[in-house]
Length: 331
Image (cartoon, rainbow, N blue to C red):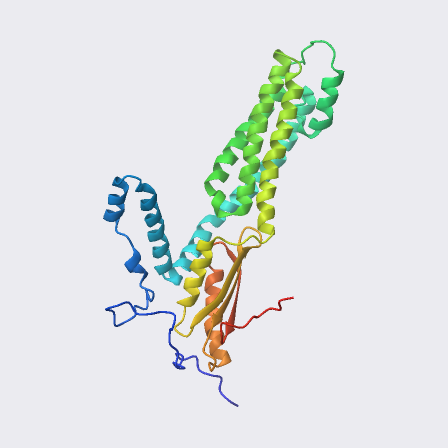
């Protein structure tokens, strides 16, 4: 039986980094900074001087962002994956609390608000009948009789408002940790507006003018519809595979190119939304005479490392021996 190939360090295979040139006056390429990006960093003193110039704020802001991106590129891949894993572990419990607490509280408040709406007969509190019932109320109401003031229903909605406020503040603090929590935060935000406005218009319909209540219900319906339409538009753009920002694609390209000395080039990088996170596809160029098992030993760790990054759902790394071939049919 033949022994499996040893996973010893790869041979050279005559590989040269043709795409990376040595800066003038430099004899050795820094493995941590093969493209000499550190030389492009602008010092804080120079940025401070730029801010003092007339119309220099935009230029100072540009160099500040550029410095941040260079630092991000030069940060080791292990540090990026470690930070992403640590952040995920730190926020996992808070995300679960936000989701479960929101579900339990919403179930309880649904019963409470249903009682408030039925007991007070307030259209502003009975949002499910806004469209049809408000029009009927405007058309058929006669006289200027006020609706009966129902204190218990307003108190119950006030309790719901306080509970929603607590959930809103909690979800606001952890909304960047999960897309699910971000949607819950938007739901709590909308409920705060509808509950507060509903209390005011319901009380106004009972104490001031009868038409304040149905008018408030109509306004609430329009506001909620507009809010969720904007949310749906943003989420549908993610489902439609919108491309990732150029900064993210540049980051992935640099990390792939510098991941291994045997990656001689990057043919292309694609990154697009498939939901809130990215699907990434990379074609790297390897030496044509490298063994299959060794090529797999390069591309698989790269794929695993990128999948551990924040905001990446899946990554696919393909090994090529040239950069000019078209891997897909054109028709």
